[in-house]
Length: 467
Image (cartoon, rainbow, N blue to C red; front, side, top):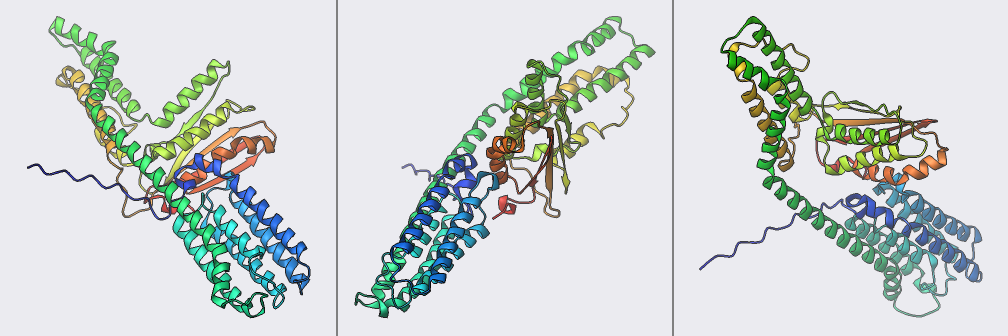
């Protein structure tokens, strides 16, 4: 009798997750929801106020209520802008608070003269504002804001119940008023929860598949790296060794030549180990600019190889903005500078490279005769070790420093000869993704120089990003 193996449980999405955070590109498509909802809320508030002048006793309060709701709608549209992502918790609280202020002012303006609560614009407008938060905020937060708002609206309805035109138990008025807020809140929370769970499941399955393929190709990668190193050695080292073996004797010139070859091998291996994804990206863009007949000068300053600590989302976001800058009309190909520095310890693999090949810039150790004969073997072993390290780095999360907060800051400078509004329009989608992936994003524009700075926190999860 065989026992069925239990199905591994999927990790649950974090409570602070939202569609905009997990899928920044998809969040861009949800942005039009905010201006559409804002337009509906403002139009209905003005129409409802104008159509019932007989119920309004204090016109100043009625106008203030409409103004508060207009401000809430404006804050919603402004906060949902892609170039200001992510939509933070404080912005959501401001939107809901302004909606509640509008409701209280509207109720006070028609106190004791309100015929019925079903046509009050403030609860309906507040519910629509909560509905618009679905793509931008976590479902638990929307539910909490909706519940608090519903309690306040219900309490206001209870206070008005003795003066309403229809004689019904006061609790019924409270339920009707609360439903106008709770129904959209529940719909928004359900939408946010379902979308977040779907995106999280897809991302989990994708990462699991990537890890599986990396494990399968680890040995193949090691062999390819070794073969590549041997080909590089074939031009100088192998002919030298063949000549020494053929003569069956070593001279002072051979020892000097062996020392020089050993230093060259070490320098090549260290340079290739130091090569990061950022170097590969800049090389591709430099080649593309050269094919367009330009003479690019792209500078990278990453002495501690902090680019290796960026996760897949951060690499994709940073790479996208670099490609966008290089292909942007008005881009100066001689002005691109990319610098990465930060606080806290450097990524772990930097120390491994230093340990394996010695301190960078150090003089080579004089080689003995035995070292001369072992050059190829040592190079192969080092290449294989490098391949294993690179493959394992894809399978295991990088170790975090428990004692010191590590923040990597990438700074991009480029000359863009475009009017400010064209520059903002071209970069707005990319800045939205950067703000959703990195903890801090700063943009400085002094025509024609554009400077972007964004931080990546390696001391923990994405909890440091704006909430």
